[in-house]
Length: 163
Figure (cartoon, rainbow, N blue to C red):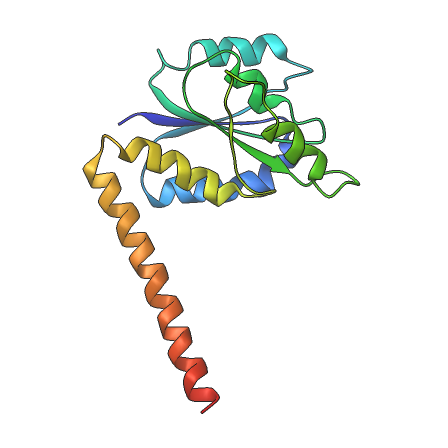
């Protein structure tokens, strides 16, 4: 099975990124976590990214706040799918990170999840791997079934409460 790369621009992003890490652990999918900065370690970003396919990565999740150019810098150096997580880390409540992550030039796509949407970033990366992995696809479907069952149970509770 291919692994997922998780790159964050700073260790201050870890509390958000841990939601992606925990989701990947839940599915027993291999992953690596790195701290690399598009601005402070651009050569490190380029080295990691340019070797990612050869190192058996299937997708890369990039989390960054403020200027948030990390996902774009990664996407510029690979044709692997890149998923950006804008991190709420400035006085603009993450809107700056969202706009920096989502506004990529034509030809360099970055899939972007919600501000602090690490769990969805992991799920999207898993869905990408599941294109060629039926066991993983079944695990994802089971997770959705369980989520639906929880909602239906809560619906029954609320119906009973407000009869």
